[in-house]
Amino acid sequence: MRRIGLFGGTFDPPHHGHLLIAQEAQLQLGLDEVWFIPVSSPPHKVRTELTSGADRLALTKAAVNGHPAFKVLDLEIERKGKSYTYVTVRELRELYPQAHFYFLIGADMVEQLDHWYNISELKNMVTFAAFDRPGSHIDDATEVIRIPFPQIDISSSFIRERVRAKMPIRYFVPELVRKFIEEQSLYDGNTNRSMEHRSSSFTRETF
Image (cartoon, rainbow, N blue to C red; front, side):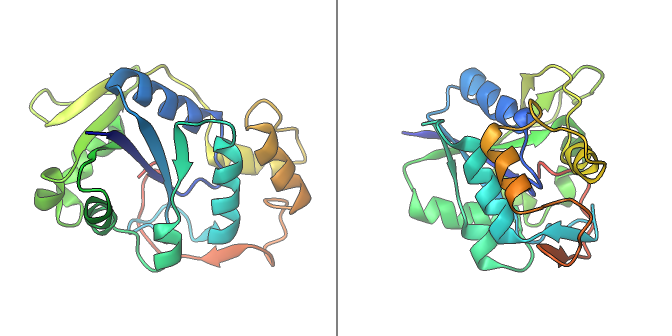
């Protein structure tokens, strides 16, 4: 049975922190592959705007380029509307009935799991794995695998802010991601391009 890690997020943009999460998940969970799933519209609010789904999909594909165990799925971008994890996992289980799925989350999301859509059924469909960063606290009673992970202070918002400030982002993101951002003039303050207005209540870009 194939062991697959599912890594959902806005990836706006993806950066080296995302790739390190995928790498450590593959190593510590013994995964055959890690599938990145850019969301269309997160069901919980984090920002009022997102870069277009097409651009975020292209950015994520650029980020994993050259990594044979990493792939990008477009099912949530193509589905449009709210991106509920339960709906996505149900679809993937129908497509890949012989796979065992692990859903990757941040430690800060563990306490919120009970509020996820159809969480009782979802827990029977995937194994949750949380990245246990220094200073985080995961209740021993939770049915979540802990993955020790160092504190890496890179975020997508940090990348966007540097681009807007015309500061270099080389070494924070893969080179193909940097080139795409530069060529497409993403995050430079011109909101007339590639921005999809959202109203949701999301707390982290890795859900």
